[in-house]
Length: 382
Ligand code: PMP
Image (cartoon, rainbow, N blue to C red; front, side, top):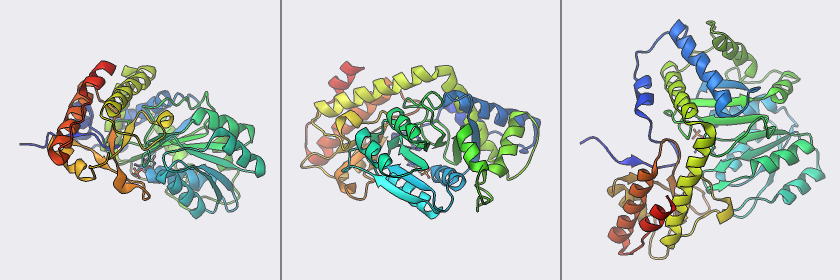
């Protein structure tokens, strides 16, 4: 029998059948008028998803890490000062990427599962001149969601550009890119945006593009340079053929289909659905006497990072797999063996919550002889 296990990791995620159909269409020329229409429409749709009519989308083949690299490559020159709001392993990755492009990086962090307070970030900003502030909207290694709105306000008051890594958040957690004055938001196709892995998405608003234009030297990487891609993205939106590097034709078609579904659902409805389903998961964890890795008030709506209770360990992940649900182990190097992660983003529904919680109940019983009941609480919350 085909693998019918439900994929509930924090990306890649289960895809809508229409998205898979679009992916499997005959590969067209990247300058075929029908593909130009699809790519052009997808770019316009990204502005709707990010709630940023004035943003310039860049969609290139690559993963989320490439999107991080692209943002850094274009905004950093030797000596650029960057403050990284550190909420986990992916924030640390951003710090590493910025440093490789020549930035002087200051990290403001917190113990694992926490986030620095706005006051702590403000105090660091006050002590030095920063050109950039980066925020990991949801750090997938800890399940911590950052206060993007509050942090962006602080950064803007300081005159810094704001870069948001939205890989595990965009299209699920509330992000009002333009209203909150976020300059760059980036993501990847395989998360809440609902397409297969393989596309890096970078949204850049005018101040970020201006910073790029004001660079003293060219971006050292040709493939990552906004200047190479801007005419291409503009041409597709104007429904004209133009070539720099071959777009991932089938992935772009899948992305466009998924974005169409997201917009049909409506962004506010989508944010609310993710909050409601995450709330049902949290009700289940609490009824099962399981605690979260993130401080409760910081827990993301896109995934749960759940600590193993005493008497249980990482064997739980395989046991849940045997019950038909694929979840992920821990990721943060300091606590890898202490928790597991359940992704809950994209096209999920209340019945997926029920399926996951009941599979976890059975797995605790089968692997550790523990009775942990969360289903009734999840149902009540739904
Ligand atoms: N940032 C965050 C917050 C992520 O969750 C991930 C992937 N899990 C990345 C960056 C890197 O994305 P990718 O694995 O697609 O390179």
